[in-house]
Amino acid sequence: MRHAGGGSGDDWPVGRGGPAGGGVLRTEERPAVEALPEPTAPGPPAVPAPPARRPRLYVIDALRLCAALMVALHHYVGTNRVNQPHNPVWDRPASHIFPAVFRVSSYGWIGVEIFFVISGFVICMSCWGRGPRDFFVSRVIRLYPAYWFGVLFTAAVLTLWPAVFEAPASARDTLFNLSMLQQGSHIANVDGVYWTLWSELRFYLIFLLVVATGLTYRKVVVFCCVWGVAAALAPVAGMPALTLLANPDAAWYFIAGLALYLMHRFGQDLLLWGILGMSWLMAQSEIAQRVDTVEHVSSWRGALLLYTVFLLFMVGVAVGLTDRLQWKWLATAGSLTYPFYLLHYAAGTTAIHYLRDRTDPRLLVAALIGAMLLLSYLVHRLVERPLSTLLKRGLTRSFARLGPPPVRRTP
Image 1 (cartoon, one colour):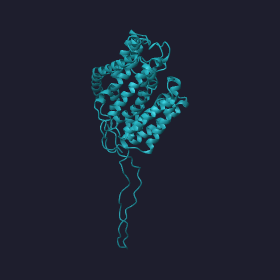
Image 2: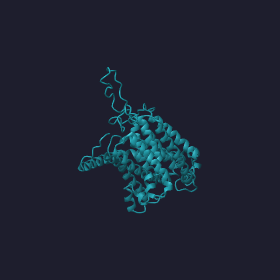
Image 3: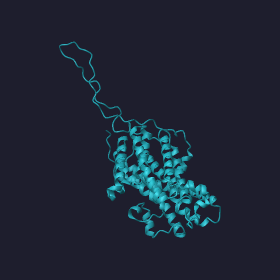
């Protein structure tokens, strides 16, 4: 949904120039002649003003859920791990059990990259016209309630049934996981999917600096360029701190999402297409590395094709081609995405291990995905919503004690 901010949402008032129509040029000896306007001093180039408010982008909710389902299907039947003989999930290669499904699900990992792009788009959209306090509160209440439940639920499952994955090394490790900072402290994730949250947190940290100064078209563009340069230089700079902040493995996906939101808010221009094109070029290299070093079951061409189709679809979303899609139930579907992603992997593969010989494998996978969606809905209604309300109320009161935030003067 477009968020109409004050003014044009840019650094300068649109169309600002020098003084219009100065004094009249005449002499005392000659008759007065029609005055010519004084030349106008060149001002900074006008940046497109945001168009009128558009309806909510329900299609984003649909894309998020589709990406989560892609990742889950990949983890259940499409990874290199589940395709090994005597693997702990199926006990035989998944490609032998699901020949056709395996070929498709082997590309499901691209759902993570889709998540990152959507995250860049949605974070920029939700933060426009808001301050750093609002940004901080919104991220805490969005990330932590379902995550806390996910950590405790998964730790309990793995402690009781350590058949596919080992139980957490200690209660201390489980408790530290509740901070969501375990990867930065070299402590193992309770569930392997949590690695993406570490990338998200680093994105939020550096983007908070831009939010604190007030989001504008120019500032977000500059941020994309500076972060892109840092991500490109980090691998060869030999500076761990730069690599940590630049996040070269994920930066270009977030940058693509930011550029797409600017297209959505301000319209297309060559600069935004250039940023999006550069992000695609850098992403294809990261995709190739992931295929070669992690996935092994999919091809670079196929993965790049899927990612390219997704980006083109997102361009269609950005320019309004999907605005007529107003199915409100998609908002509920989208709300299941985060808890579903957090809960599906370790607990789901453990369930497959114990149930694989008791029912048809296809029925088992379908029923498991359905059960995880139901559990995600319950977590959203019974955990996320109540805890988010309490956290928001408490954090708002805490920030109120700090006094009002400094007023930003608009240029």
